[in-house]
Length: 202
Image 1 (tube, helix red, strand yellow):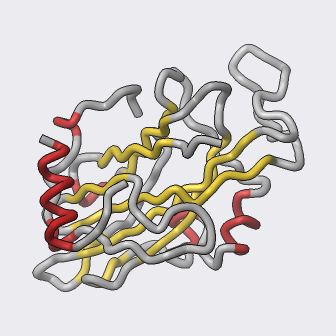
Image 2 (image 1 turned 120 degrees about the vertical axis):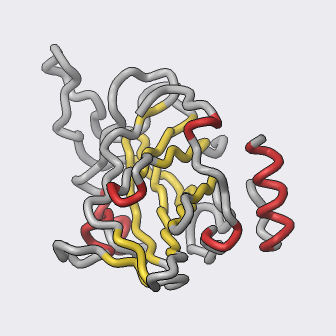
């Protein structure tokens, strides 16, 4: 079913298509071409969406924005361990999130948007953001860091119809991990949206 939707979206827009482990297709809202963000090139990573999905008035696309090796320890220790889970030279995956609104009201309320339940496939732990170096990488790409940056930390986040809002995330990559299940949870949309980002091969 997902393949059929993706092919239909690609045909309509002319777009090439490139937190629980292994989410099912049933967890994804039905795609609507009117709310799917169109890709805009970045100077790193891919210009084509890694995945996309939508609700009735909100479209979300995610892009592989490239990877980097960290220059400092994460400062994050796994549960029951005193060892840094992601020491210096760990790999981090950057993800660009693009939001597009399509509501009769002219804007969509995305107040409270989070990605806190995102996970790497096969890993029972939540994905960990690189808050040490991720913000600097976001600035180097000319993107806000996380949704708070995209909406200037205002208490009410409004998404004007068809005026794309983008922001960057960067997650530490656990050993052997290849697929990130990014969970975009917007309270006004009732159901979280799960999108998959597969790491490019080195």
